[in-house]
Amino acid sequence: MFRILLFTLFLAIVFFVAEQYAAVSWLHPAWKTLLVFYLSVSFLTHRLVGTGLQDNPDRFIPMYMAATVSRFILALLFVGFSLWQGIENRRAFILDFLVLYIVYLGFEIWGFTRKLRPNSKNR
Image (cartoon, rainbow, N blue to C red; front, side):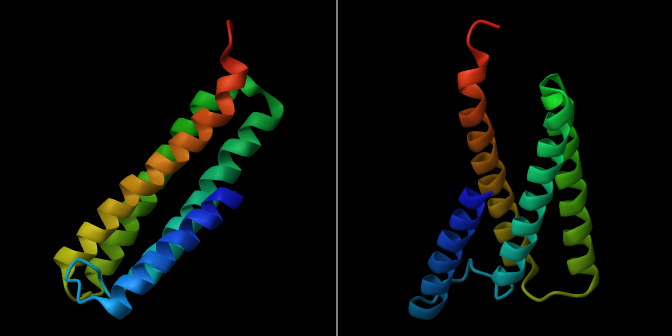
């Protein structure tokens, strides 16, 4: 979980610098909300998979799939609610949201596979 916090802090610094020192059209003003959303979803995913692995390590795949589906549903609800509220510059918001979705998902997959490599030798 510490890596997700560091990763989010790194992205926040990059977005802050881009917002302050460059006129970028791809960065939506609600980038802070997006980062908080993804940090929250990452925390929930981490807890869901961790809770599932405590009892039985063989339940990793179903728990990870449940976490992925819940991430997708939460993402759809968040985007739907934001669009329903009438957020400005919808194209930039959706583009930033999708890019962050893929980046966070990739980072978490990398983190999980990194932890599982020592356990997967000749099973």
